[in-house]
Length: 160
Length: 177
Image 1 (cartoon, each protein chain N blue to C red):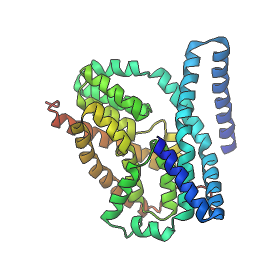
Image 2 (cartoon, rainbow over the protein chains, first blue to last red):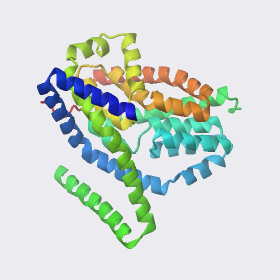
Image 3 (cartoon, chains in turn orange, yellow):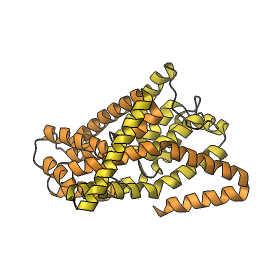
Image 4 (spheres, rainbow over the protein chains, first blue to last red):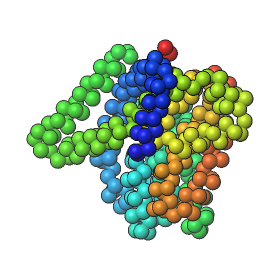
């Protein structure tokens, strides 16, 4: 996280030294873009807070642990698609699930859909890409996630 | 019609915050939990977003359109995809940061297939995230995932880019000034 502040600070400093006017223009652009997309972020955060309440970690681990492979993958992709978690929460959760005996294949489906398929980020994505392309991109991502899950299943010998 | 939609949205957002506020006032546990979720995620994003948008602003001011067009535009080759995956690897946050970056890249003349590759790669190839993944699920897991997902991301982005270019599709680039 800190390297982000460091890089931003250095870039800003360098920009101010080189050209003060351009830097002001840049900050104006940043501010405008940020404010324009803020309502979409607010809606996303509201959805996130509700979904995390109705689909807590405990429920995810309960459901992923006790099922056959196909149901496991289906549920994992469903949970991964409808929730949103930062990596530092998601991967430790995957680690716990792995110890509980959840297969790599199911975890691949869960973690990949979590990162690539964004139902909760839909309000933001559609502001930039439009509804149609947002849906296409998410469907493609879901297919890619399923292919990855199958490949992981093959490599770990879990599929057969 | 559009106006009406806007009011409905504001109304629902108002109800949400009224509900959370009342939950805190009267000690309604479920509502408080929802409020805590909202606050913790907002803080997480507010730690990243200002920096991300400042960098986007600096990018728009300092990087010349011709440069982006040359390396990531219509005539860029395989190197363009390598550059964009490296950029994606260093993206922080997640998709919600990748979308505004993608919009700026489009404004500067990057082609659609490169932009969709960026979004896909920003979702699954971020370096800090991959290190996290490898430490909990093993290096083998991360390697298989990367080796399989990157070609799929590029392939699907090229197809999607071609299809959308035919339809003269444009990504929304806010503030034209």
